Length: 610
Image 1: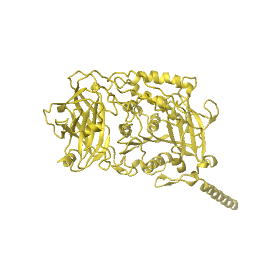
Image 2: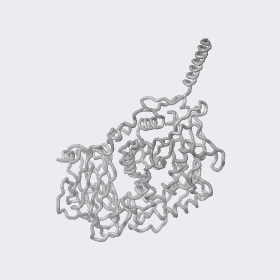
Image 3: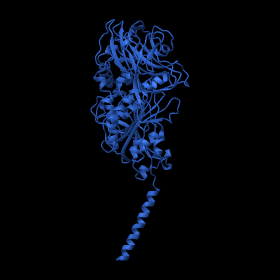
Image 4: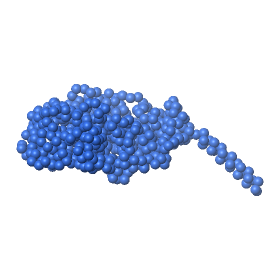
């Protein structure tokens, strides 16, 4: 009996050793210093398995009798077949993968007209010529993540590429489409081998843990998916995301274009991405672009309404569970930095794992690879690398490399305190900005002229077309971190007027060695909306209206030898409607001030200027 027991024990040990040997021969993810490493067995792209499918969604937006299906492309290591390996997924979705509309004359809205009026000429609606080959939707992120032990999944947004449905530019289906894909990755939704067949395909190779990332529109959609609270979406890294269509196309009641795209509006973007089934386009155009958008976008007043409110992901975050790493550029004048900051602040208040990476450049720019790798390694592979305890904010300081950000406890800098500066007369030349108000300054006037750029306004030594006020020359560096706020009392000679504001570093120079960008921050507002963003009314000539609004968030060190200047003007050549020059704006200096978030507060400012 004892002999048989010993023989059985030896056999069990041999079998265990054999199993261990087999396990050791398998290709598995490898982690060092809390990051997923490139694994040789995952790195030969010729061995990767690539296939496409269609996931059934919960909506029907293209007018037929069936639920829309979205086109999905999968790239995974061969070991997910040969060794029954299950891996987490990096998922990227986009409306751009199948091509976009050509940039033809008239695609943008005409901006050469009076405020409150509609252009006499309707804009052009170019058709998208669909591009792309099956099964490849996109190759983005594949070389980065597959060799590190991830599966990469791409999908085309509704109404684009081979995905069914209609584009809505922020409508519910743009959140529900990636939700359905993530549900399929978790076995909770159906996938099919064809867009209209019934042969099912399952994601047997998925662990169910999904991370999403992307830039610009592709960065918006991870947030959209996360707001649904879908099970399995563990972490997202949105890069320069558009988190609110209103904040993208309007500013404090003002019709304002995104930088570089003067005259763009939400219907322009709809046309730009509408690369889906040509036969479905007429229905989609009539239903979405020519009905819902035409009725809701309101280029006459620029007021906030339900159409815009329903396309703001800040209003939809209550069910969000995914860990959030935001990325944005402080000099992104396309998708402006407020888009990330507003989401970061709410996610932080909700208690979600939240970090933010800001750089000093323009549109786009992902966090350093090590940040992204640690984020996904922890939340998707479950490796305890301590990333959740890392500093909450990383900011690339002026002229530093993007992969060498400076760590801070949070954004804004916790040591930043609001300091209010007051205007002193002389703004047609250069008036003073001081820390104490100088009463009885009365009023100063400017005359609108859209042909003059913001840069020219800041560089002019004398101008009737803008008001400029500046601090004394800084004797030491000054650190601004957060959102500046302007309070202004203004009257207009006409019933409607643009109001534009820039905070700049003077002298205004193009020398990048002096400062990353002379524009510290900027903002725009419609005086007609002085009571509410949802309510506008014609301005009465000679009557003053009080407005308070935030400028774009920033984190910048203004160097010694510079001055901080406040530029107030009317129409912004690069961003606003272009009414006929001549509108007079009068500013009550005694009721106007600018509040800056200064690290070290008033003491730091006094030390810098005294």
